[in-house]
Image 1: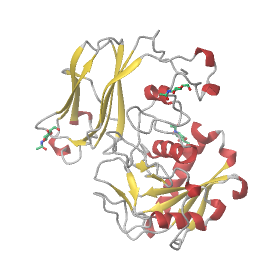
Image 2: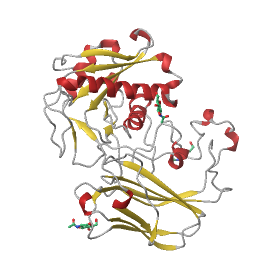
Image 3: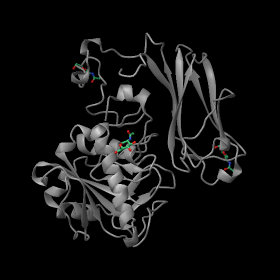
Image 4: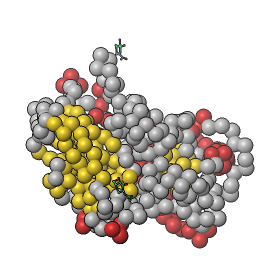
Length: 362
Ligand SMILES: *[C@@H]1O[C@H](CO)[C@@H](O)[C@H](O)[C@H]1NC(C)=O
Ligand SMILES: *[C@@H]1O[C@H](CO)[C@@H](O)[C@H](O)[C@H]1NC(C)=O
Ligand SMILES: *[C@@H]1O[C@H](CO)[C@@H](O)[C@H](O)[C@H]1NC(C)=O
């Protein structure tokens, strides 16, 4: 939802979804929730709780968190989770400047089972949220008609429905219904990202996916830059020198017998590089070693990440030599085997500072 070219350097990529084009994608089935089909089923009972309210729904943009996989006795947890996320996106940069135009509500319905489904099978919950496998990626919904009915029953109080699955780990989906989890590490990040798809129809923020389009993308240099009005000096805009020689989304479980490795070719023509990857199920630095051409990259997990997913960028000065290189992930702790996963890995190479300005603000 920002400038994709710059974001690629600044912020870890994320996302997930239905498109399986080698990367993580998002469902663009119908990005405009207001065009949702008419509800064919009755709405579930909803307890509406105001979270951040700035004025009457008749002239505000209303975002509603709907509960999925929260039992009756988990009602307070749902309100706390929704409240934390509403505060985060409305107090921080994303929606802060438009906060006076927005309302955030929580709509609670108890589910019969707690949590979200895995392996493609929903639990007995209000909207039937589930993961495809166990990997921390897309979270899908089995009951769009129930979600449509719930949102419609609120009339103008529901412009953008957000289905929140009661699971502490990374996951989400954009589209007609924004889907998130209340992961403390990733929930707000995923919510921002998915609302970008849902509200203003921006494409992905990372390289390699089919969804690289929208108001933040610039793909034809013969055309004017669509976001030049955001630039302080539009006439100074130029293409920065960088290349991505490798990107892989293995979603592979790690074991202590054989490291997971990927090889790639570098042209040897760049001054700097970044090793980018995301992992889940590896809470300790001693659990895993990440090497590039046999050199330990000194990976340390984000503090308190537990088994949740997190994206890492290892910036390295100095160019890669021309020829073949090997990136490897060696699991050191056998006790992590059932859950330790390499989600994705990527190499980016950059020119020197005269060819690729890396200072904040660019
Ligand atoms: C977002 O805002 C909340 C307060 O509402 C704060 O606790 C949190 O650290 C902020 N997050 C970021 C990434 O700035
Ligand atoms: C790029 O834009 C130019 C100018 O509008 C147009 O003529 C050309 O067809 C475009 N190229 C592609 C590949 O879309
Ligand atoms: C261990 O991991 C390697 C690398 O991902 C894989 O090729 C191999 O099949 C795995 N072995 C087992 C027993 O899962």
